[in-house]
Length: 227
Image (cartoon, rainbow, N blue to C red):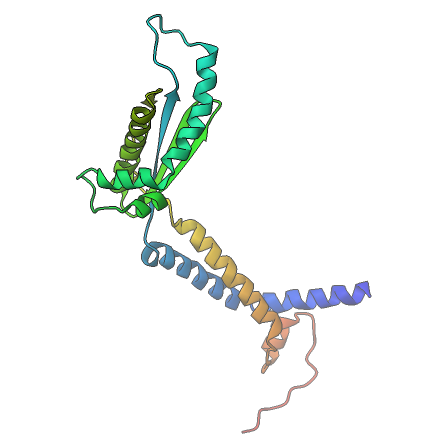
């Protein structure tokens, strides 16, 4: 049983080797199609990030921070992120967008472009914005991090914040990744090519084709094709 299975496996491998040119061609086509899709069909998306440090205290004259203030900062940071994700905050932001944006954005568009997370242990709020325009991504990220935090601090009268780094304009798309798409295209094409090569029966017409398929065989006789 094992020997028979090994023989079948060997025959399949020889069949794939005989059709290696076809498999190489199909894989190359899949790779090129993946590149074309990534570079020319799917609209590029640009992502930029920002970090904001939040504290739930007003600095004292001696600049010291009490343990209770740090504990409050951790709890409020998570609560503030919830407010930042509320519909009313995005609606207010849409009404006060900078004029430097390439186009107006609705509240729902800002919500879909924005990703906000928090590291409560470090009191750090992370902002990430993805749009089809690199400048807009940077402007929206910088604007919303300042705007939403300023609105919340003004409403509650508690806390202060500081932006860690200036938002940078992305120089290359975050999606799609041409190399990844090319590899995926090549892999899909290779799998389909292997399935086709093993499933479709191959007609053999010449002695050379037989020896290419089974190198160690001897051809006893051949029949001429009649038309």
